[in-house]
Image 1 (spheres, helix red, strand yellow):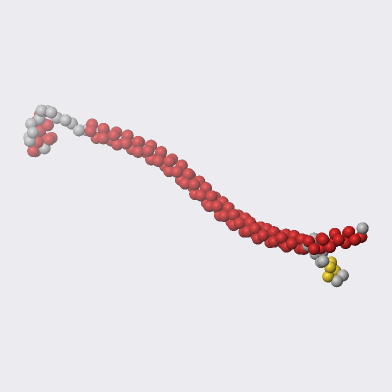
Image 2: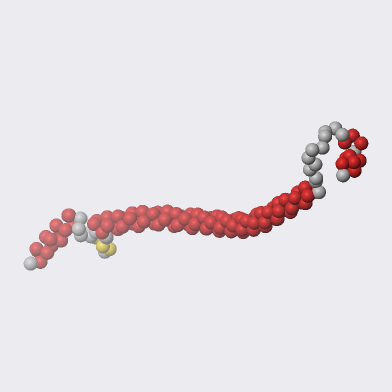
Length: 140
């Protein structure tokens, strides 16, 4: 039986599945070296991708912070504009009330000023050369 295990060891060695000996030290099998190499390659690829993801996350955080700041500024301006609109609406209401009051006062003043005007019908035109008072004294 010892011969058969030696034959299997030789077959494994020839197929690259068994480690070769160098002096007293046993080297890594070829398949393990390839696996290690591929694992290192995958690790490096992952590290590069993770670095890129980290950079993208940092950029997204910066963009998010800038966007939040812009939104806060916009909300502040909108609030100020709303306050101004309320104030101007109140002012417009007050001005409208004042305008209506002034219009009423103007109509009252016009009516009062027209009360003092007399309309004299039937007087001949052009006779008031000396003034209306002597003419009225004569008629009355």
